[in-house]
Image 1: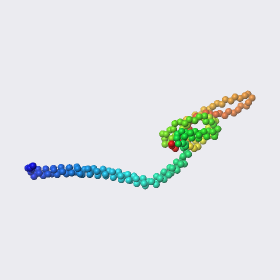
Image 2: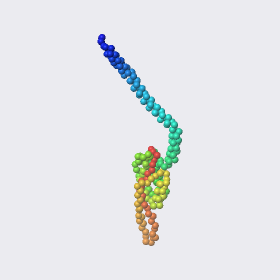
Image 3: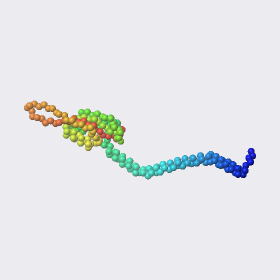
Image 4: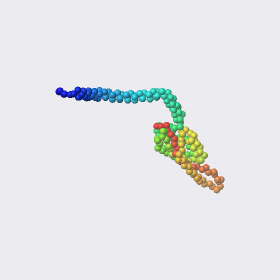
Length: 196
């Protein structure tokens, strides 16, 4: 093919062909390489950031180990504040035995206890039992004091105290006998478990 082009047209056509070839070479060779370079640069920046975080953690390692040791020692000391037991039923039974021992020591009587569902909404499972007992006011005072100051840490809730009138028959020839007023007490006793 023979095209009769003026020198200006020839220059324009050759420049257009050259630009087309350069565009194709750029699109085929340079753009994929540039995209891969950009992706590698982002990945490298991510790895460098991760390395900086690991370096900071390594620098804090000794301090963190000291904090862990302190928490472990504190945990060992505070373990007596929790009700022992590997399950909710065992923890509730331990709490019932704890209460029964205290009540018998002060001379009162446990009428009934009932384990309530475990509340696991907090950091530690809350073990609760519903209690009904009978005793005199002095015994109850001692019981509440022991619950407040004893271990495991236990808390009273929904306390209801009702007096029970004792009726004693006496014969006319007997002297009046002093009546010790017994009260009926109902409450919920709660404590926490270290976990199951």
